Amino acid sequence: DAARRLIGADLLPLTADRREERRWQLSAMLARVTGRLTLSLSTDADGAGNTVNPAHAVLEVFRQQQHNESLGYKKLHESLGEPCCAVPRPESSFGTRGVWLSAIAGGAHDYRNGIQLVRSAWPLLDAGLTAAIAREGDAFTAWHGLVTAAAGRLDPRESTTPISATSLELLSSCPLAWFYHYGLGLRPPDAQEYDSECWLSPLQRGSLLHSVYERLARDYKGRQAALLEDAARMAALAIADALLAEYRDEVIPPSLAVYETEAREIRASALAFLEGERKHAREGRTSWVDFELPFPRKASVRFPVGEGSIPVKGFIDRVDRTQDGRLVVIDYKTGSPGRYQKDKRAGPFNGGRHLQPAIYAAAAHQELIGEVARFEYRFPTERGENEDVRYDAAELAAAGGIVAGLMRHVEQGEFPPTTDVHDCTYCDYAPVCRASSDGRKTVSPRAAWAELHGESLEQYRDMIARRGGDA
Image 1 (cartoon, helix red, strand yellow):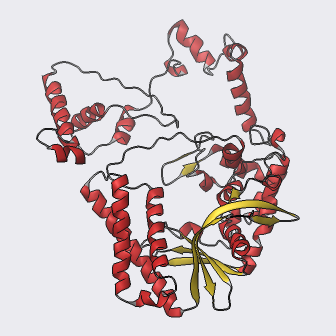
Image 2 (cartoon, rainbow, N blue to C red):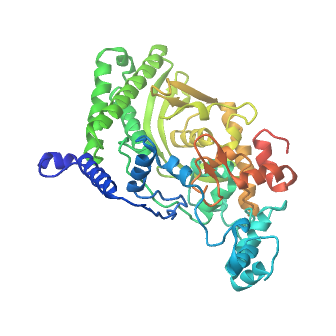
Image 3 (cartoon, rainbow, N blue to C red):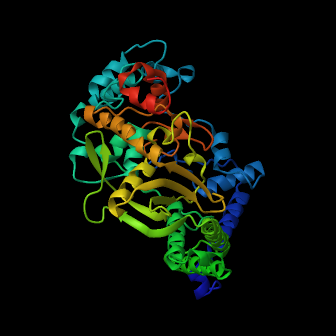
């Protein structure tokens, strides 16, 4: 639309104009109908298994029928009910074909032993039914994540390829999801959809804000006291505006209103970061050392685990130095601090889901040759309210035992699904496990099975223990 405006809206109609014209044409066509009109729609699914919505024209007809222009696809699907099926329900069967199909579908009488006939004719279907039955049992099997052929083959201690803290956190969160990603190399389909109400994706937004924080810190390195001057506020806004212009050239906003809304939030986050750093400057307890520190830079960086170690990689947002010469490792988070708060029952690392502090502290110690005093998650945005979550040296040292427990999964080739359904809410592999979420409640058959049977299975001993339960 931005390009069309430049050429001339009178020559090339905009999206809103074309949409309104189609609506008018549809309304005119419906007005000419004198009899009964029947519309059909597909119940197909996309690559992620989600039901595809019908054409917008169907929704428009539904709105006109209900005399309510605000109705959406959810109400349309609720109104339509369940789709028809080639195999009718037993109570609705009629004729010889219907009775036979009803028997196959699990009716009261299995006249032809249809299930066995179909299973013998279709080996892959038979294997699927066998797996479905096994998944409902109380034993830990290959259909729950027992992969004996993978035992030891994925052990990062035996590899020279470094892994990220995110990988270890996923292994702790759900070993089965970790095996899908790092063992089988499965990746979700790229199904990005155009959103007329959003400019930057969460990843792009986070990257932009990290750049704002880095540029401002680099500009004031060695003169943190100058952050207290009025000029620092103008400098922070100028950096934010410069980066906004760069991103706008790369990612065209859907509208000026959407851009201005997100730009205001970016500028507000830049000022929130400034206010947080002014507080630290007044205290004068630390000085800035390095920014955007990748590791390993030269030699391998390894995280100690028992008698061995794991090669690790990552990107440290910032390192400060205290007055006594120790290091403070800092990681910026642009979301809500809620999920990073410490849980007394699950421990400071939330049962291993937040291992980044320990991994990054070990990396800073090896790369910068210094003792680490603490790690800090900082939330320098309006939403984060400049909160921070800190890990002292004693807490950081305790992570080695958690990682050692995680290594038993790769040693034994045992990758059980999580016992916590909340781990499934934003999981890339939710469709594989038949998990679903409506934004308020998540349903996961595998997590439910794990919660029911986990306490009686040896494969869950470490997971339950590190999450604060009884092993």
